[in-house]
Amino acid sequence: MNQKALLFCLSLLIIGTVFQSFSPDWGFFGHKRINKLAVFTLPSDLILFYKKNIDFITEHAADPDKRRYASKFEAIRHYIDIDHWGAPPFNEVPRKWLDCMMAYTDLLLINENADSTRLFITGPEEIKADSMVTYLGSKISMDAYRGIFITHIMDTYYEDERKIKSCDFLKDLIPELDKSCTGVVIVDHFSSYGILPYHLLKMQGQLTKAFESKNLNRVLRLSTEMGHYLGDAHVPLHTTENYNGQLSDQLGIHAFWESRIPELFADDNYDYFVGPAVYIDEPRDYFWKIILDSHELLAEVLANEKRLSQQFPEDQQLCFEDRKETTIKTQCRAYAEAYSKSMNGMVEERMRQSIHAIGSCWYTAWVDAGQPKLEEMEYETTEAEDKSKETLGEKTRKIFGRSHDN
Ligand SMILES: [Zn+2]
Image (cartoon, rainbow, N blue to C red; front, side, top):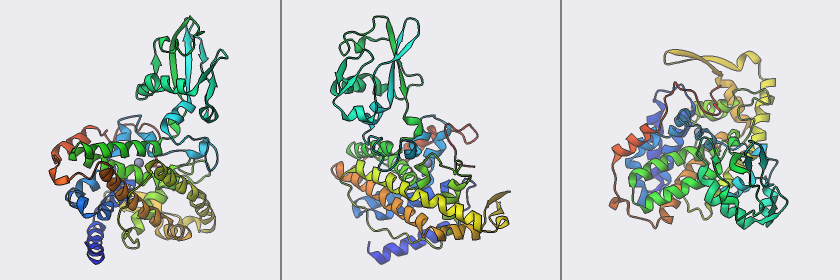
């Protein structure tokens, strides 16, 4: 498709969506828009399949958010509170998932009297060194520790209570192990602060495998969900403990930035021509760069709103607006416009970068899978849709982890 034709398609798409009714949960608006537009960054080998399924990719863009009601393991995939761990460049946070888990997981030995003792001294520094100290003062090599971590600890990640009911697996590693040891409790100190960049890399691998196994249902579902998490990664407030301004007296800034501003201005004012998808050489570095770039923008996101809230007439900051059958209180249009202007197109730029990143990740997975011909692959829409319904929780149920709705 040439540039003009592409622009024409995009404008039809945008005009078409202006008249959509708005969901009261505004966060969904941006995700849907971003996923939909990512399709148009794809090369000719891929675009037909993605275009054929553009309604699915759009409609299901917010499924991972809905799933936060169904699983406590879901919420942490949407963010990383990188500032909890230190300051840029965040060397305290190992970029590899295994290293990160080894650095921030405690293994507690339990004995007959139910006393617990920390088994290893772990942290990012120990991970870099080639040996570490056990609770009895003897040293073991990092390779040996890595070995037991991979075989015995990592696969307990999704268990509700992480416990190994025997100490046998430690015997070879620590000959002087306490005979009264009855088991090991595994305590993860990292995950509750968010695992977004690690989850992106995992999904990239899964998407590549889905292409390799020629399973189009899976390709479709993973592409759609990957789009969601990539969108989240581009939002500065998804990289901080102060994710909703609760630590700086700016409660509600999360939805203001990522929902209210796009909802008001994304249709008329944003330029969505982001250029073609590109191949990503190093997905891990790529995902981390997105997170670090987002985090770099955080100071501006917070400071500009703070300044504006002090300068702008107080009674003109929040307005009542009718939505379907309800009236809601939200940032006034003029206030949102002033905030958006103060950030110099930042929201638009992060949206554009999300769109380009999503197309590039889809394209990269396909290339890494050996560029399979999509028309020769298996495809059943209904199964993909059933699968995604199956995993969703009900909106009325309690959310696990944090919510950005207030
Ligand atoms: Zn999310």
